[in-house]
Image 1 (tube, rainbow, N blue to C red):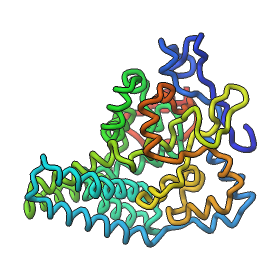
Image 2 (image 1 turned 135 degrees about the vertical axis):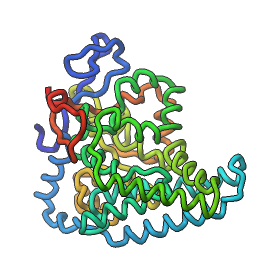
Image 3 (image 1 turned 60 degrees about the vertical axis):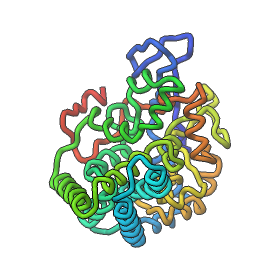
Image 4 (image 1 turned 45 degrees about the horizontal axis):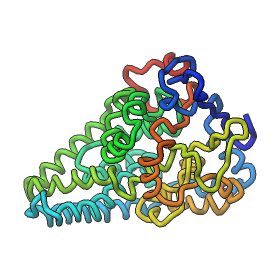
Length: 370
């Protein structure tokens, strides 16, 4: 494996029968993914950065500010939901507040739960689980307990077919391979991210899931009792819009989809496919999203919290400056929809490697490692 963590990535030539997985035939090369047979790049780069800058490990550890940000955003959403209890659902005011404020707030809470899943709010794992459940309340549906094992597996098994549930399935890539299909995906992607993991494998049900469900339904019932259905619908609409055609939702697309040209350009000299499979964004929308745009830095050092990710970049500029990056999340969505060379199949996949975090139900290791 190259010392810089580069991956050998292959995609079936247009004049050959492609593979939906190594050794398996598919009918249309447009629906193939980028297949690699090397380790994901983040571990290799992390080791190289630590060797060059051993002081970077001092950035690891919880960020006390997180719990206060979560408390503030939860309070804001509860206040807005209460204030909209008598506002008609089908009104410009209701939808405008939900899109501008609600979707921004709930996307912030999605990413707070993402941050907390790495135990980066408290030292205590239990305190992190409970804070995630609290951050989940304005989202309207319980998901924080299930998100954690799926997301940690995404880190440990980046791009591994059958383990990384962030990857689109072959069916998604086939049926949504059009402007209309990609528009549908971007509009309703929150449902894809919610339902796809359960279609790939199921994590065991634990007491944390039970507390998550009980707390969420108790909160929803209390809001319904003391406010109205419209207050509950405001929160649900905010969650939907947060994962739809919203500027902050661009991070879902920008993080791991491989575009043919991302500035600056770095190519594999053999097949001219971009080597990296994770892309960062350093723009102002990071202010609302726990710096999730610094995604290479996050995958390289998942134990470093959001407030110190810029320090990772500054400390190891020689590693990050040459990497391709996105300059705009809005443009990432726009190009994903309209560029015929970009689609759901533009993801790097690997057949082997990785590790399942938290166990699973109805998952066969032999099927993934065969």
